[in-house]
Length: 97
Image (cartoon, rainbow, N blue to C red; front, side, top):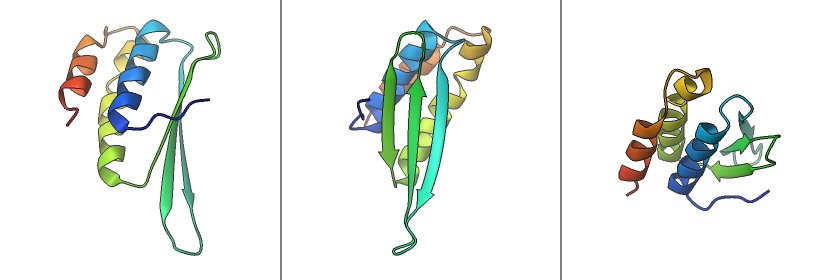
């Protein structure tokens, strides 16, 4: 299961996967803390069991978390079948840097 190097790449790959297979793709958010230094890590995974595609991203940065949540929260319309998600892909790639 490959890990992506940046939030932009993860958002782009995840939105494309959600557009291709909106009913079977699952998003998983996992938050862990280190008891010694009290730093938290968020792991986000997009997985489609039908195609076997899986994308992972880990971060400690709040800005990355906000970008991922804003971009993928908008994909709920795609998963429900009420939107195509093209505007979300354009917004995610337009806010790359």
